[in-house]
Image (cartoon, rainbow, N blue to C red; front, side):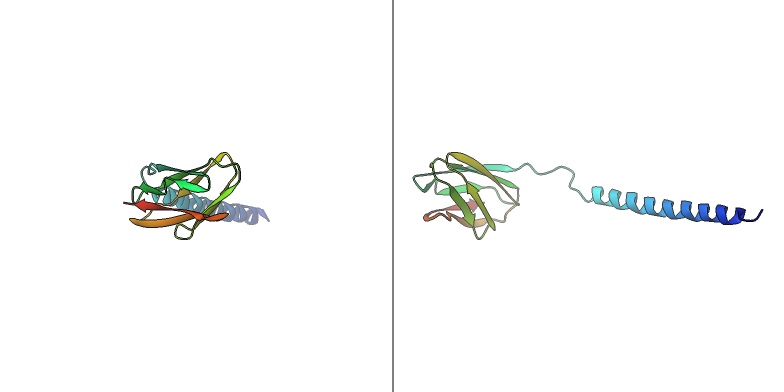
Length: 128
């Protein structure tokens, strides 16, 4: 029959192409999942407050090579901006509220921070 081969060949070509695309997609998805760490690292929580435009405590510590969740509590009625050039982070925390900053795992060292709205307020994160 005329046209039968064309339909059959087209369907076979379509099925082959679809199979290749699905195989590529699922292969890439499997590869991406296999590259993930077995378990996500638990973040270390570190807290600092700012009151009367001063960080309390002015020096905070955190463990090295684990993610860090930094909780910044602003006890003043005015907003402040937590900023650190070395951490590459800045976050505005409104008055009488708390902000959370998630940091990547850090190497041991000292990381300075300050209130960008009142640069006399400064502190340091010491990673050990």
